[in-house]
Image (cartoon, rainbow, N blue to C red; front, side, top):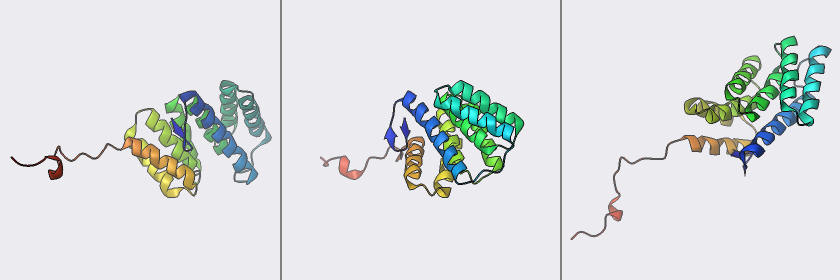
Length: 174
């Protein structure tokens, strides 16, 4: 797996995907990019983060789901749950959560990147290409955009010249 420009084993990729999602959560919250939430949904969200930090991804998903049930427009909860679903190889669920993030707020361009990865891992090449291209066009993060380009390159078929052999490789005439 390639994530953030580093070649990783699959299990390391899953942990890294979760870490990135949680890091982005903290950054977004610190910048005040999320709207005011009622204390109950925020409490479930915080409990989900606490469970994640203890290594309990499934419990974290449970609490994020409860936060979403209380506030169906809780973008950060969808985003982080999508990251956890991706780490758990639950690609359809991850795609659904990242789609919901983009429906709620299309400024979360990272959702295009992670939805693209989920599509790629699920074998949906065309959808993966679309999302990765959208991410590259919208992203200000040149490092991750470079990684997205690498992911995109893996999806493109190699150039095929219809079996023609360039003249210089044929050799001398007899």
